[in-house]
Length: 279
Image (cartoon, rainbow, N blue to C red):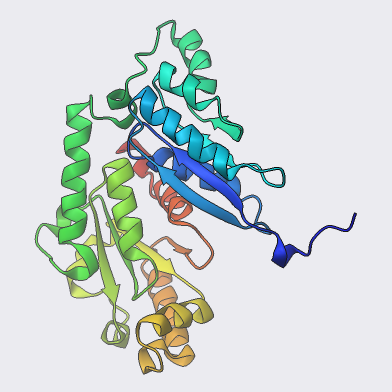
């Protein structure tokens, strides 16, 4: 039997299930799916599954997506044991990102887990929750150079030309790791000098640079302002070239965000900046 051409194969249905927000299931599941770049997926996140009745309704949806020709992939971080057992009844391929490893952790720690949703998402740790909320507020206030107040209190300052991924990376680091991250845009006027922009001039040790490729940056900017000088390949090339020179001159670490996910960027930034000790 001759297989269908790749462009006519229906996307594989993928579900991310969780007792909370579903961020962990989605992040871990997408990390695995990224290893299959030639395939297409139809993704759906179903968060806040907190009762057996809800789980039964979810299983019906999962089974409806599983046919003779396609099997749904189901990534789950549901911690409640009874709800998890109900979800495991699905005809889809159930990938348990929580329970399958919990026994090992319990065995090593010699303590039984509580299986609580609050414990999984950090709500039970009031201090950690408050730190994350304050970090998100800080990131929003200091997005794209909107505020320079208390900039010295930032754990990290992302600097980059417009549309290199500063905002989503700042928010991800705040939400997932509780880090106070400001981001500051490099505009053409900043490239008239070899000095860092005045607001971050004395904070170079906290700065981290983002780059992209001219083609990718031009594409992203073109979606926002098509046909503009701002989005032209020449302008993007100039800004990226000058930004890279600025990073090098001031010994600011940097990464190219063109082909990286926000999760990958955050991991590299934390490792390079030794911020893991703060998270």
